[in-house]
Image 1 (cartoon, rainbow, N blue to C red):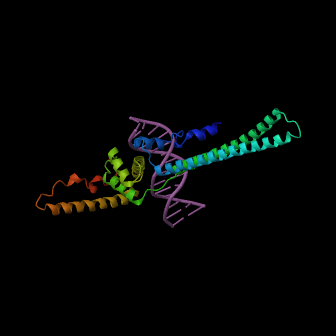
Image 2 (image 1 turned 45 degrees about the horizontal axis):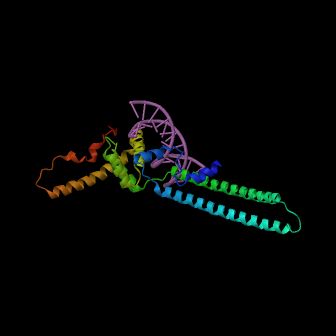
Length: 243
DNA sequence: ACCCATGATTCAGG
DNA sequence: CCTGAATCATGGGT
């Protein structure tokens, strides 16, 4: 009965209910409860409702078949009662046998349905654990931020949200990314030197463009306050250490 | 088949 | 809570 209850009572709530997954918790906490990975989730829900629908139609079919078979047997018994006496008790016994048979079949149906749900559930959980690399564009945006804030690569909540939006990933994914990036950068600065230079140059170019545009706009003004824009070269030290 | 990069998870500390 | 660190597990290139 437990499996049955689970199947029927769970409804379309997510599979992470009992899991206590850190990702789910983190995502929920980060995004204020709104659902990310909604594509997979809706897919899961659709499949679950499909399974339940099949289950209910099958169950109905079995019930109908059971009733039909019962009346059929009753008719047979009634015909036989013309040639031999049949007690009501005997009829009751037959009906009982039929019902027991059909209910055991229904049990099997429940069992297999539950199995299907379990498989679906584990598939879903596996899928969300699976790692997909971010798009090149997304990593570019993240790296740009990281290397232009190398002295303090800790984006605020708002910054994280903006990055998440720009990269079309979740805030918790941004947090993961920065967590991994910081530790891996620190661990092997040499390996990231090239990358750092690349992004420094890249932002330098955009900064230069901005400066050029500014200069063009007001050539007569004094070109002071170069530090206000936080341009990249000054953001990391020559030894590459953070802070 | 192997290896490394990488996103996610876990756990400890503050 | 957020973070650092270690670790897991997969992706993708060779």
